[in-house]
Image (cartoon, rainbow, N blue to C red; front, side, top):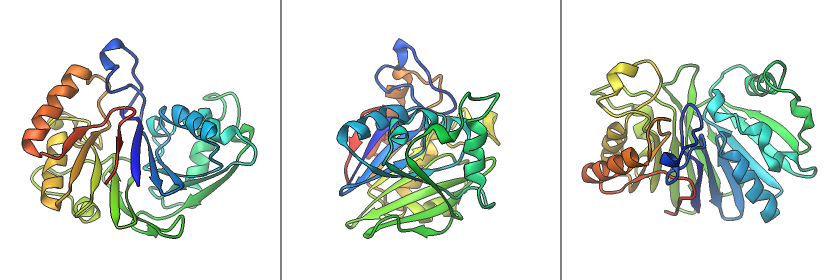
Length: 271
């Protein structure tokens, strides 16, 4: 079991020499449970992952969305895996209660005047799987995925993937209440080996961004310490957060919680 990072930014992709070390693509992580490929979010990092999956010869992928804001789905029209006949892509989403909401969102993304071609141009067999955040999913035997609703405009879903006695959590985009830990998040990450958490802001920045649906790296450290987490991954970096700033955050985070690491493209972690 391992997790690999293909996109670590929030809001919008960035390209500049100041972002070379940590990367500029938006949210996308790959998680392997044995031979099973799971993907979480379809930001611009999905393009590079797709090319790697095609080269590997992978023919079946389950892709789980935290939600359908554009920075988390923008890579889907450019996902090489989905453009291969004979491949199977199951697209899961639980942040919207209405059946078919995810498919409608993707069709809207890939339609005029936003995009020149519809989803039908993708040659893979694509199935949309709607669920309600809070359910436990079993995409394959031996893999359990617990889900929880997150505090984000329009809703979002957090995931805990359990396989072979280990657990990895993906918790983005979510806004905390200062001085009060989110019980949904604490319950989801309790005792986890690895937690990937929305750290868009710092505690100093947070008051100016109330209602935006994001948290801070300090709150992530507090949550992971309270929940007995082993490794805390700082994720969903603000677009203006350059390499120098992220190095500073990583040093400060490790003083606050020794198991802290800042997500960067290409980083691979195992429980």
